[in-house]
Image 1 (cartoon, rainbow, N blue to C red):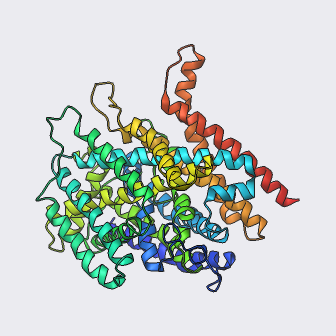
Image 2 (spheres, rainbow, N blue to C red):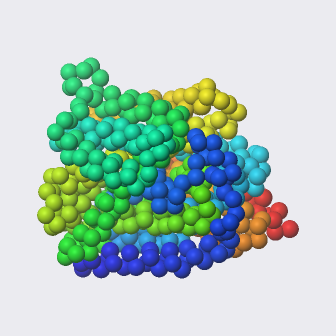
Image 3 (spheres, rainbow, N blue to C red):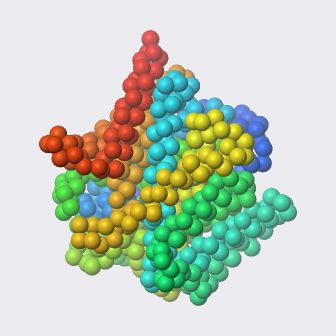
Length: 552
């Protein structure tokens, strides 16, 4: 079977979904072009800043499409075969993820651009609000932990790491300079794009010539140093105005995504490659992971992701200039991420099942596959591989600073800290646990160092999907309260709750068995899983009570 058939079918389904289901949802949500949005009425030049739809789509797309739609699909395909992962990506994105993102964005805009956390307070009650805030904050911390370690891991990779680190640093400076040009010196967006987009291409090329590496003679492992540098960047990015870094960085990062997405899709469509990896490997992976529920929490971004709802209602809703833009940004942005996941999945489909490349990390598999797709256009494969790895790191940057800013928002809501010093304190509190977690040296039973992201990824995926389920529960209550079709969110919520509760139970079971047999052990992952499960059940109970009241 050819990759062309798979890519063409996925593209056709996504286009049809945007044209049909996306338009239907927009009609049900009653998007009005003349209804004032919070970005316009509350414009403060810092957090509330109206942006044109194409500009905002790039920024939103960059924020949500980090490493998730690459790492998750690659792991899912390696474990269970490409067909289950493909079905979940395509139909999950259309009926689960895009509905979740679109409805989260619209509901936030309708509530003064307040976060989904505050919507929980209004529609589920103060008790659910407090519980949900704690859950969201923990979920954001897991995002920061997993993606900080993924980024630093790519910076210390022997062949390309130093070049990626150099290019990433220059890229951030370029984004800051673009922000100053746009908002301080009023440079037209078209002119700024014409200057800074080629500059980013130059940065990719120059980065490999001036590698930025931590000396191995230092007493601390280079990856730990990079972890500290990345978290310091997150702190700065969280407290400076949106226009200075987040918006221009997201805009430029959007072009990274568009370019890599276009190269991948075109390469798949015209390359004539045949699928070599098995479509289905069984209901249980070689590592003992069951397809149900592990596939649906491993492949999170690209199909459905709770983090997207926090982004939609946290930063994106504060930049929507017109309500109809929500369809392009919310529903369309998720479908684009689904396409990124399909391209990432295709890089596994190229491999033979016994290929040594299947033992590599997901970012290396992705970069190798993408460079193969573009090589046929006469582009140097090594340059393409470096570009793909830089794009991978850029995607994570885009999520890291947004996640930290959102963690600040939630912590300030939780504590009532206000003002500049409140923002600084909330940011430090949000980054404290990630700093501790990524400073650990994790080893496997053979004594080999294991990347921290591998330890946290399963629980990160589960907490992320559980966050999506609870967000869909809140949206369902809002839709019911406003007399709109509510099954569009209730059915996905029920499925996601089933998969995530099941996954948490599997995570907790070994620890609980040891506890019951009189062999208690300190298992931080299991304890956090217990905490997430308790918080989720309590929020769900409050949601069901609120929904029952709407039926009366």
